[in-house]
Image (cartoon, rainbow, N blue to C red; front, side, top):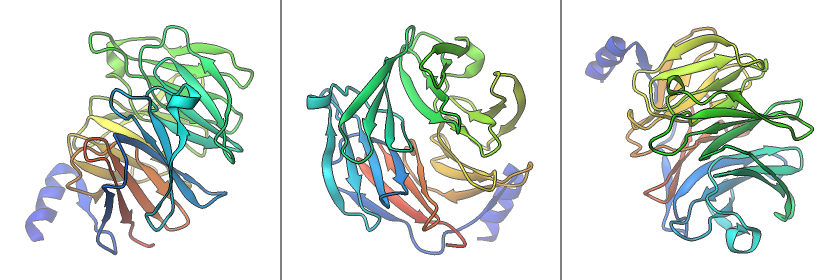
Length: 281
């Protein structure tokens, strides 16, 4: 343990441990489990599944780890193709499909419209601000730089940050309680912007290839790092960066259950979810 703390000091991080051992849910029908979101109103988790070459689907999972409905939203019937990012806002579930944002009713799972994003190549993650503005990352084709799009509450689509290499093929994105938008991609940097797109600051993780980002109520962040095989807690006001989950092969678009202070880590290749009860829970 002492060696681990010395290594953490060299990396500029601290090491923390959950109160209970992580628990993994696997072999339950997931296929390419990419993203998980906590539905507070129903006290359940929604999980997007890429499903290989077949139309994707979204599952309902209970907090005890049981699959309530494997194909609650079935791409075969709804037109859903490759569900990547999910976001729940009010009575709607927003899903990032490669070229559009699909919208579903939170109670029934029925299709409730969609927003095409002209010029999009591979929409990945999304977040909805308090005013209804949608921010979405475009990780792009393999030979193209990424971009960031914004969709106004009235449905007007714009390229919020133009396609360019400095975005490092953006993946995860979140809106913080103060309205700041944070995103990350192939590198180690978290980039913080105001709603106009202006960069406010940046923070670097010990290791990169950033995937999911969760904005916490206190202004901190949970951030998945595929290169680190870990999830980091980034404390507010330039506080410490703490490793809260480790030895995760490929952590994807993570979720957080604030009722239980639980980190939920989906893994695409392993087709699984890992529950990590965070310190203080």
